[in-house]
Image (tube, rainbow over all chains, first blue to last red; front, side, top):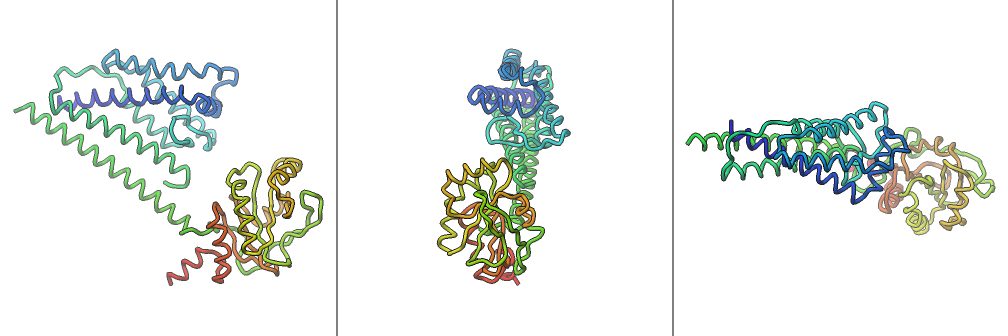
Length: 169
Length: 199
Protein backbone atom coordinates (compact mmCIF):
# COMPACT_ATOMS: atom_id res chain seq x y z
CA UNK A 1 0.00 0.00 0.00
CA UNK A 2 2.82 2.34 0.73
CA UNK A 3 3.98 2.52 -2.87
CA UNK A 4 0.45 3.13 -4.02
CA UNK A 5 0.02 5.98 -1.54
CA UNK A 6 3.25 7.57 -2.68
CA UNK A 7 2.43 7.13 -6.35
CA UNK A 8 -0.99 8.68 -5.78
CA UNK A 9 0.41 11.54 -3.74
CA UNK A 10 2.97 12.65 -6.30
CA UNK A 11 1.03 11.94 -9.46
CA UNK A 12 -2.09 13.73 -8.20
CA UNK A 13 0.04 16.70 -7.15
CA UNK A 14 1.73 16.68 -10.54
CA UNK A 15 -1.54 16.48 -12.45
CA UNK A 16 -3.16 19.33 -10.56
CA UNK A 17 0.02 21.36 -11.00
CA UNK A 18 0.15 20.76 -14.75
CA UNK A 19 -3.50 21.62 -15.22
CA UNK A 20 -3.18 24.85 -13.30
CA UNK A 21 -0.06 25.92 -15.15
CA UNK A 22 -1.78 25.21 -18.44
CA UNK A 23 -4.79 27.23 -17.27
CA UNK A 24 -2.63 30.22 -16.33
CA UNK A 25 -0.76 30.10 -19.63
CA UNK A 26 -3.98 29.96 -21.61
CA UNK A 27 -5.50 32.92 -19.79
CA UNK A 28 -2.49 35.14 -20.31
CA UNK A 29 -2.00 34.01 -23.90
CA UNK A 30 -5.59 34.67 -24.93
CA UNK A 31 -6.98 37.10 -22.39
CA UNK A 32 -9.76 38.36 -24.66
CA UNK A 33 -11.16 34.84 -25.04
CA UNK A 34 -11.10 34.37 -21.30
CA UNK A 35 -12.61 37.75 -20.49
CA UNK A 36 -15.40 37.07 -22.94
CA UNK A 37 -16.07 33.70 -21.34
CA UNK A 38 -15.89 35.23 -17.88
CA UNK A 39 -18.41 37.89 -18.85
CA UNK A 40 -20.61 35.15 -20.25
CA UNK A 41 -20.97 33.55 -16.84
CA UNK A 42 -22.79 36.65 -15.59
CA UNK A 43 -21.46 36.10 -12.10
CA UNK A 44 -19.08 39.06 -12.05
CA UNK A 45 -20.40 42.63 -12.37
CA UNK A 46 -19.23 44.18 -15.66
CA UNK A 47 -17.33 46.85 -13.78
CA UNK A 48 -15.22 44.21 -12.06
CA UNK A 49 -14.22 42.49 -15.30
CA UNK A 50 -11.06 44.55 -15.52
CA UNK A 51 -9.80 42.57 -12.54
CA UNK A 52 -9.99 39.39 -14.62
CA UNK A 53 -6.31 38.79 -14.05
CA UNK A 54 -6.98 38.03 -10.41
CA UNK A 55 -8.19 34.60 -11.46
CA UNK A 56 -5.10 33.46 -13.35
CA UNK A 57 -3.06 35.04 -10.57
CA UNK A 58 -4.90 32.88 -8.05
CA UNK A 59 -4.25 29.86 -10.27
CA UNK A 60 -0.55 30.73 -10.36
CA UNK A 61 -0.49 31.02 -6.59
CA UNK A 62 -2.23 27.66 -6.34
CA UNK A 63 0.48 26.12 -8.50
CA UNK A 64 3.17 27.75 -6.36
CA UNK A 65 1.52 26.55 -3.18
CA UNK A 66 1.62 23.02 -4.50
CA UNK A 67 5.23 23.28 -5.61
CA UNK A 68 6.58 24.93 -2.50
CA UNK A 69 4.82 22.53 -0.17
CA UNK A 70 6.09 19.65 -2.30
CA UNK A 71 2.55 18.53 -2.93
CA UNK A 72 1.14 18.67 0.57
CA UNK A 73 -0.73 21.96 0.65
CA UNK A 74 -3.41 22.15 -2.07
CA UNK A 75 -5.96 24.47 -0.55
CA UNK A 76 -5.99 27.14 -3.25
CA UNK A 77 -6.22 24.56 -6.01
CA UNK A 78 -9.07 22.79 -4.24
CA UNK A 79 -10.93 26.05 -3.66
CA UNK A 80 -10.56 27.25 -7.24
CA UNK A 81 -11.66 23.92 -8.69
CA UNK A 82 -14.76 23.89 -6.52
CA UNK A 83 -15.40 27.55 -7.33
CA UNK A 84 -15.30 26.84 -11.05
CA UNK A 85 -17.54 23.79 -10.64
CA UNK A 86 -20.03 25.93 -8.72
CA UNK A 87 -19.91 28.69 -11.34
CA UNK A 88 -20.69 26.20 -14.09
CA UNK A 89 -23.40 24.48 -12.04
CA UNK A 90 -25.09 27.79 -11.23
CA UNK A 91 -25.28 28.72 -14.88
CA UNK A 92 -26.52 25.28 -15.86
CA UNK A 93 -29.26 25.59 -13.25
CA UNK A 94 -30.06 28.99 -14.67
CA UNK A 95 -30.71 27.16 -17.90
CA UNK A 96 -27.83 28.77 -19.76
CA UNK A 97 -26.25 25.93 -21.67
CA UNK A 98 -24.68 27.85 -24.51
CA UNK A 99 -21.93 29.80 -22.82
CA UNK A 100 -18.29 28.90 -23.35
CA UNK A 101 -16.63 27.35 -20.32
CA UNK A 102 -13.48 29.45 -20.69
CA UNK A 103 -11.32 26.45 -19.83
CA UNK A 104 -8.90 26.94 -22.68
CA UNK A 105 -8.34 24.89 -25.79
CA UNK A 106 -11.34 24.12 -27.97
CA UNK A 107 -14.48 26.19 -27.45
CA UNK A 108 -16.52 24.10 -25.07
CA UNK A 109 -20.06 24.96 -24.01
CA UNK A 110 -20.66 24.27 -20.35
CA UNK A 111 -22.28 21.05 -19.23
CA UNK A 112 -22.61 18.75 -16.23
CA UNK A 113 -19.70 16.70 -17.56
CA UNK A 114 -17.44 19.65 -16.88
CA UNK A 115 -18.83 19.97 -13.36
CA UNK A 116 -18.06 16.30 -12.74
CA UNK A 117 -14.60 16.64 -14.22
CA UNK A 118 -13.86 19.52 -11.87
CA UNK A 119 -15.23 17.65 -8.86
CA UNK A 120 -13.00 14.66 -9.64
CA UNK A 121 -10.03 17.02 -9.98
CA UNK A 122 -10.99 18.65 -6.70
CA UNK A 123 -10.85 15.19 -5.16
CA UNK A 124 -7.26 14.97 -6.36
CA UNK A 125 -6.59 18.40 -4.91
CA UNK A 126 -7.56 17.49 -1.37
CA UNK A 127 -4.52 18.37 0.74
CA UNK A 128 -2.68 15.41 2.17
CA UNK A 129 0.39 14.55 4.15
CA UNK A 130 3.46 13.50 2.26
CA UNK A 131 3.99 9.76 2.46
CA UNK A 132 6.81 8.62 4.67
CA UNK A 133 8.67 6.17 2.50
CA UNK A 134 10.86 6.87 -0.48
CA UNK A 135 9.85 6.00 -3.99
CA UNK A 136 12.58 4.17 -5.77
CA UNK A 137 13.34 3.26 -9.33
CA UNK A 138 10.22 1.64 -10.75
CA UNK A 139 8.10 3.47 -8.23
CA UNK A 140 9.15 6.75 -9.80
CA UNK A 141 8.42 5.36 -13.23
CA UNK A 142 4.99 4.24 -12.06
CA UNK A 143 4.34 7.74 -10.76
CA UNK A 144 5.07 9.21 -14.15
CA UNK A 145 2.84 6.66 -15.82
CA UNK A 146 0.03 7.51 -13.40
CA UNK A 147 0.58 11.22 -14.10
CA UNK A 148 0.43 10.61 -17.84
CA UNK A 149 -2.73 8.58 -17.46
CA UNK A 150 -4.28 11.33 -15.41
CA UNK A 151 -3.42 13.92 -18.04
CA UNK A 152 -4.85 11.67 -20.73
CA UNK A 153 -8.00 11.10 -18.73
CA UNK A 154 -8.39 14.85 -18.30
CA UNK A 155 -7.98 15.45 -22.03
CA UNK A 156 -10.46 12.69 -22.86
CA UNK A 157 -13.05 14.02 -20.45
CA UNK A 158 -12.66 17.53 -21.82
CA UNK A 159 -12.93 16.44 -25.44
CA UNK A 160 -15.97 14.30 -24.73
CA UNK A 161 -17.61 17.31 -23.10
CA UNK A 162 -16.82 19.45 -26.13
CA UNK A 163 -18.20 16.76 -28.45
CA UNK A 164 -21.39 16.21 -26.56
CA UNK A 165 -22.27 19.84 -26.98
CA UNK A 166 -22.20 19.29 -30.74
CA UNK A 167 -24.64 16.42 -30.66
CA UNK A 168 -22.80 13.46 -29.17
CA UNK A 169 -23.33 11.78 -25.81
CA UNK B 1 11.07 -8.60 -1.33
CA UNK B 2 8.31 -6.86 0.50
CA UNK B 3 9.03 -3.64 -1.32
CA UNK B 4 8.74 -5.33 -4.67
CA UNK B 5 5.40 -6.90 -3.86
CA UNK B 6 4.17 -3.52 -2.76
CA UNK B 7 5.29 -1.99 -6.04
CA UNK B 8 3.61 -4.73 -8.03
CA UNK B 9 0.32 -4.23 -6.27
CA UNK B 10 0.52 -0.48 -6.85
CA UNK B 11 1.35 -1.09 -10.50
CA UNK B 12 -1.61 -3.42 -10.88
CA UNK B 13 -3.98 -0.93 -9.37
CA UNK B 14 -2.73 1.84 -11.65
CA UNK B 15 -3.29 -0.50 -14.59
CA UNK B 16 -6.84 -1.27 -13.49
CA UNK B 17 -7.55 2.42 -13.28
CA UNK B 18 -6.08 2.93 -16.73
CA UNK B 19 -8.21 0.15 -18.18
CA UNK B 20 -11.37 1.42 -16.56
CA UNK B 21 -10.63 4.93 -17.77
CA UNK B 22 -10.03 3.78 -21.32
CA UNK B 23 -13.02 1.48 -21.33
CA UNK B 24 -15.21 4.32 -20.13
CA UNK B 25 -13.81 6.64 -22.76
CA UNK B 26 -14.37 4.09 -25.52
CA UNK B 27 -17.93 3.57 -24.36
CA UNK B 28 -18.67 7.27 -24.32
CA UNK B 29 -17.11 7.66 -27.76
CA UNK B 30 -19.09 4.82 -29.24
CA UNK B 31 -22.29 6.44 -27.97
CA UNK B 32 -21.29 9.73 -29.58
CA UNK B 33 -20.50 8.02 -32.86
CA UNK B 34 -23.85 6.23 -32.81
CA UNK B 35 -25.68 9.50 -32.33
CA UNK B 36 -23.68 11.07 -35.15
CA UNK B 37 -24.48 8.22 -37.54
CA UNK B 38 -28.17 8.46 -36.74
CA UNK B 39 -28.27 12.14 -37.46
CA UNK B 40 -26.02 12.46 -40.44
CA UNK B 41 -26.25 9.88 -43.19
CA UNK B 42 -23.49 10.04 -45.79
CA UNK B 43 -23.21 13.41 -47.44
CA UNK B 44 -26.85 14.36 -47.73
CA UNK B 45 -28.68 17.43 -46.57
CA UNK B 46 -30.00 16.67 -43.11
CA UNK B 47 -33.72 16.51 -43.71
CA UNK B 48 -35.64 17.15 -40.57
CA UNK B 49 -38.90 18.97 -41.03
CA UNK B 50 -42.10 18.97 -39.07
CA UNK B 51 -44.32 20.25 -41.90
CA UNK B 52 -42.88 19.67 -45.34
CA UNK B 53 -43.49 16.41 -47.14
CA UNK B 54 -41.79 15.63 -50.40
CA UNK B 55 -44.35 15.36 -53.20
CA UNK B 56 -46.84 17.71 -51.62
CA UNK B 57 -47.41 21.35 -52.53
CA UNK B 58 -45.36 23.83 -50.59
CA UNK B 59 -47.01 26.63 -48.64
CA UNK B 60 -47.73 29.61 -50.85
CA UNK B 61 -47.02 33.04 -49.46
CA UNK B 62 -47.44 36.40 -51.16
CA UNK B 63 -45.30 39.14 -49.77
CA UNK B 64 -42.88 41.90 -50.67
CA UNK B 65 -39.18 41.30 -50.93
CA UNK B 66 -36.69 43.56 -49.18
CA UNK B 67 -36.76 46.01 -52.10
CA UNK B 68 -40.53 46.35 -51.81
CA UNK B 69 -41.30 44.32 -54.90
CA UNK B 70 -44.25 41.95 -54.73
CA UNK B 71 -43.24 38.34 -54.96
CA UNK B 72 -44.68 34.89 -54.27
CA UNK B 73 -42.89 32.19 -52.33
CA UNK B 74 -44.10 28.75 -53.34
CA UNK B 75 -46.75 28.09 -55.94
CA UNK B 76 -46.19 27.76 -59.73
CA UNK B 77 -42.89 29.17 -60.95
CA UNK B 78 -41.02 29.53 -64.20
CA UNK B 79 -38.43 26.97 -63.19
CA UNK B 80 -37.07 24.92 -60.33
CA UNK B 81 -37.14 27.00 -57.17
CA UNK B 82 -34.36 26.79 -54.61
CA UNK B 83 -35.31 28.46 -51.34
CA UNK B 84 -32.27 29.23 -49.22
CA UNK B 85 -32.98 30.16 -45.60
CA UNK B 86 -30.34 32.27 -43.90
CA UNK B 87 -29.91 34.76 -41.12
CA UNK B 88 -27.50 37.62 -40.63
CA UNK B 89 -26.11 35.98 -37.50
CA UNK B 90 -25.27 32.74 -39.22
CA UNK B 91 -21.67 32.66 -40.45
CA UNK B 92 -22.04 29.37 -42.36
CA UNK B 93 -25.04 30.82 -44.21
CA UNK B 94 -22.99 33.73 -45.44
CA UNK B 95 -20.07 31.57 -46.47
CA UNK B 96 -22.45 29.38 -48.48
CA UNK B 97 -23.89 32.21 -50.55
CA UNK B 98 -21.46 31.95 -53.48
CA UNK B 99 -21.83 28.17 -53.34
CA UNK B 100 -25.61 28.25 -53.47
CA UNK B 101 -25.50 30.77 -56.32
CA UNK B 102 -23.20 28.47 -58.24
CA UNK B 103 -25.34 25.41 -57.59
CA UNK B 104 -28.52 27.24 -58.59
CA UNK B 105 -26.84 28.35 -61.78
CA UNK B 106 -25.58 24.93 -62.79
CA UNK B 107 -28.89 23.26 -61.93
CA UNK B 108 -30.83 26.02 -63.65
CA UNK B 109 -32.91 26.81 -60.59
CA UNK B 110 -34.29 30.13 -59.45
CA UNK B 111 -32.69 31.13 -56.20
CA UNK B 112 -34.74 32.76 -53.44
CA UNK B 113 -33.16 33.94 -50.20
CA UNK B 114 -35.34 33.92 -47.10
CA UNK B 115 -34.10 35.61 -43.98
CA UNK B 116 -35.43 37.11 -40.78
CA UNK B 117 -34.36 38.73 -37.56
CA UNK B 118 -32.86 42.17 -37.10
CA UNK B 119 -33.78 45.27 -39.06
CA UNK B 120 -34.90 45.38 -42.68
CA UNK B 121 -32.25 47.99 -43.36
CA UNK B 122 -29.53 45.59 -42.22
CA UNK B 123 -30.77 43.00 -44.70
CA UNK B 124 -30.80 45.51 -47.53
CA UNK B 125 -27.23 46.47 -46.69
CA UNK B 126 -26.20 42.86 -46.54
CA UNK B 127 -27.92 41.97 -49.84
CA UNK B 128 -26.16 44.84 -51.54
CA UNK B 129 -22.75 43.97 -50.16
CA UNK B 130 -23.21 40.32 -51.09
CA UNK B 131 -24.37 41.23 -54.61
CA UNK B 132 -27.69 39.50 -54.24
CA UNK B 133 -29.67 42.08 -56.18
CA UNK B 134 -30.32 39.58 -58.99
CA UNK B 135 -32.08 37.21 -56.69
CA UNK B 136 -35.29 37.51 -54.77
CA UNK B 137 -34.52 38.23 -51.13
CA UNK B 138 -37.36 37.99 -48.70
CA UNK B 139 -37.38 39.25 -45.12
CA UNK B 140 -40.07 37.27 -43.32
CA UNK B 141 -40.39 35.20 -40.19
CA UNK B 142 -43.67 33.83 -41.51
CA UNK B 143 -42.08 32.06 -44.44
CA UNK B 144 -39.58 30.36 -42.18
CA UNK B 145 -42.34 29.20 -39.88
CA UNK B 146 -44.61 28.07 -42.70
CA UNK B 147 -41.81 25.93 -44.03
CA UNK B 148 -40.97 24.70 -40.52
CA UNK B 149 -37.36 25.76 -40.84
CA UNK B 150 -35.48 25.11 -37.63
CA UNK B 151 -31.74 25.10 -38.06
CA UNK B 152 -29.80 27.19 -40.54
CA UNK B 153 -28.60 27.12 -43.26
CA UNK B 154 -31.67 25.38 -44.68
CA UNK B 155 -32.71 24.78 -48.26
CA UNK B 156 -35.96 23.68 -49.91
CA UNK B 157 -36.23 22.66 -53.55
CA UNK B 158 -39.58 23.17 -55.30
CA UNK B 159 -40.56 22.14 -58.80
CA UNK B 160 -42.30 24.34 -61.36
CA UNK B 161 -45.72 23.52 -59.92
CA UNK B 162 -44.69 24.55 -56.43
CA UNK B 163 -44.48 20.98 -55.17
CA UNK B 164 -41.84 20.19 -52.56
CA UNK B 165 -39.08 18.07 -54.09
CA UNK B 166 -36.44 17.92 -51.38
CA UNK B 167 -35.23 19.86 -48.37
CA UNK B 168 -32.80 19.82 -45.49
CA UNK B 169 -30.08 21.46 -43.46
CA UNK B 170 -27.13 22.23 -45.73
CA UNK B 171 -23.57 22.97 -44.70
CA UNK B 172 -21.71 22.59 -47.96
CA UNK B 173 -21.97 22.15 -51.70
CA UNK B 174 -22.39 18.40 -51.41
CA UNK B 175 -25.49 18.86 -49.27
CA UNK B 176 -26.98 21.35 -51.71
CA UNK B 177 -26.30 19.11 -54.66
CA UNK B 178 -27.85 16.20 -52.80
CA UNK B 179 -31.15 18.07 -52.94
CA UNK B 180 -31.06 17.92 -56.72
CA UNK B 181 -29.80 14.34 -56.71
CA UNK B 182 -32.69 13.40 -54.46
CA UNK B 183 -35.00 14.97 -57.00
CA UNK B 184 -33.34 13.02 -59.80
CA UNK B 185 -33.68 9.77 -57.90
CA UNK B 186 -37.33 10.44 -57.21
CA UNK B 187 -36.97 10.51 -53.45
CA UNK B 188 -37.58 13.39 -51.10
CA UNK B 189 -34.44 12.99 -49.10
CA UNK B 190 -31.14 11.18 -49.31
CA UNK B 191 -32.14 9.34 -46.13
CA UNK B 192 -35.13 7.92 -48.00
CA UNK B 193 -32.85 6.85 -50.83
CA UNK B 194 -30.47 5.14 -48.43
CA UNK B 195 -33.38 3.33 -46.80
CA UNK B 196 -34.74 2.25 -50.17
CA UNK B 197 -31.38 0.86 -51.16
CA UNK B 198 -31.24 -1.09 -47.94
CA UNK B 199 -34.55 -2.83 -48.62
